[in-house]
Length: 104
Length: 123
Image (cartoon, rainbow over all chains, first blue to last red; front, side, top):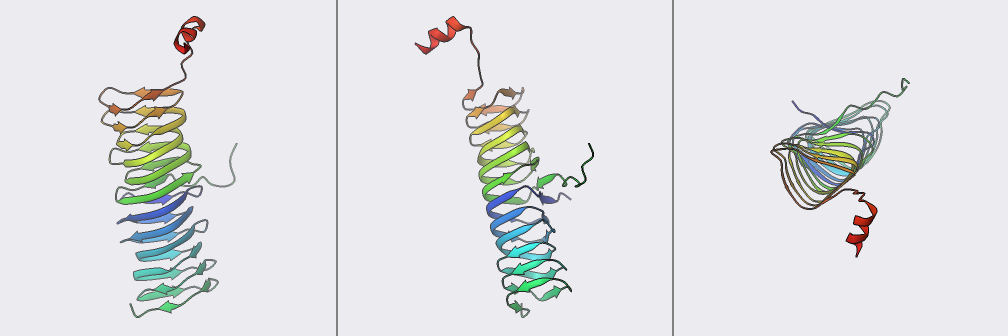
C-alpha cells in the first residue's frame, strides 16, 4: 500500500486530509484530518490540530490531538496541547504539557 | 562521497491524501493524490497518473503524468507526458510535450534569435 511520507525538508502550511497512513518527517502547520495512522518521526514537527485514528509521536507536536483509537507519545517526543483518545500511552522520557481526556 | 546522514525516504503524497495550502521543500516529491494551493520545490516533482494539482508550481524540474491546473515555472525542465492533462502557462528553459499529452496554455522558453530577427520582433 502506498504510504504518504512528508520528507524532512518539506513544509506544508494548510490542511491535509485523507484516508491513508501518513509519515511526517518534515513540518506541517495548520490542520491534519485523517482516518488512518500518523507517525511523527524524530525530525517531524506538527504545528496543527490533528484528527486521526492513531498517532505515534517521536518528534514534536504543538496543537490539540483527537484520536479515535490511540495516541502514543514515545520517549524524546515533545508535545504541547490537549489529547483526547480512548487509549493514551506516554513513554518514559516523553515531554508533554496539556490535558488528557480518555473518555472518548 | 558517502553522506553520513542517510537520505530521507522518497517523499510521496499518496492517492488518498489531499493537501490544501502551501507546500515547500528541498527534495524530490511524488504526488499521487491532490494538492490545492501552491507548491514550491527545490527538487524534482513527479505528478503520477492519479495525481491532481490545482496549484501554481515553482520547481527545479517537473514530470506530469496526471493533471495540473495552474501555472508551472521550472528552473530546468517541464515534461508533459502521454496521458497528462495540463491547463496553464508553463515557463522553463526546456519544455517537452509528448505525443498523447493534452496541454492548453502558453509556453515560454528562452529563445535566442539571430540579431536581425530579434530586432524585427522588438519593433
